[in-house]
Image (cartoon, rainbow, N blue to C red; front, top):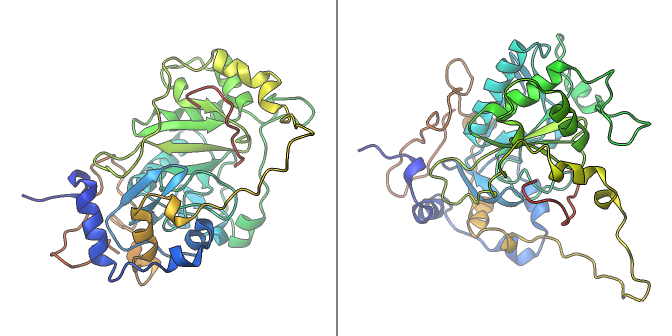
Length: 353
């Protein structure tokens, strides 16, 4: 009977990870360097079947693949960051979403921001999450008809959907019904667990959306996210090392949890006790703070090139179907599995963000 990684327990995954890592060195742990420096310095993924480990904000991923920098209905932005790696199902979802966005009138496609690093893990800058290859940022700017050059992708500024002179108010000159359709479309896929947007955008959707409201609850308000929205996939079926987030609360989210964002509490500066001793400098996250599998992911050998690490089918595109689209290759015992060719969030917030 043919086996796939989708049905293997974490114990088996860890044994296979140990097999392709010829020696699990303690270098990363012994040096005491922050995990963000170690993961941020990786140019290519761990050569293994796709496996996310840990949570969205505390984990890593083995066997990540990169979305091509250019596609018929997408372009990847800020290429110098090398953050266009993700779980194969995330890459497939983004390609499918890019086509659907065009059908909704979203220019010639989508502009894709950060997904994850080649091996996931903490980043040097910009995000607390995006660590297991299941998060992706989509610009609120459509892909232009003429492809952007690599330099333009580095320099092109973000466009906020908010009014500059009015607190938490969507700019009606910029926000269109197509923006709303694109966000709701992203939330409609069953494998998408959450969409993060600025509270003002969530409020705008609550006030104006006249279509099916059953997926509005997936669209969650959060700090920032006024120039892009954030897609978060649920843990793939069978990914026993992936820690899921709590379920989204029932309802459309157009309730007291949204109203809280329009009070002073979320935005008030923390009160300081003049008699309190200075707080110690926060300790940088170490590899030892992450799931144990992440040390193996970090030390595992990688592919010889991005081409080897990128799953390609049907003329170079990822398959667009959902959970069963990717079937990991088989390997004999002892052999390596090879793939074919923010803004900080304060602790005080409503549950279900």
